[in-house]
Length: 157
Image (cartoon, rainbow, N blue to C red; front, side, top):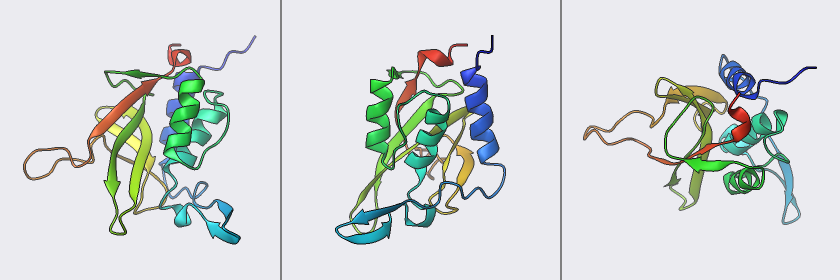
């Protein structure tokens, strides 16, 4: 009998995704009001596609998603729960930021330990390793606060 070790596999997949330039999650085309559009904006908005692909691969959600809200909804429907403490393999939801055009942007990724996370980088347009709060501002406050932390019981292997 073979049983996939989901936590170890999740961490390996996530860490391997950030080893170089990984453009697997860069584009997703949709019909938007009759016009074909890359809804991931060439990788700038790919965090949910990246996170949901990893979770789907390990059967920790039901389907892939292009939005953070859709990913989180599926996570709850698939047995994920909010937790208080970070642990390797946990999914992180960061606070929303507002772009210059006024659009709000949620962000999702994975905690890998040692105050590091991996998520899709807006600037690099592919998964990257970074500090869990993207470092601190001059006043010592986190650059981007963690809003929620999620865990699935199947990661307790």
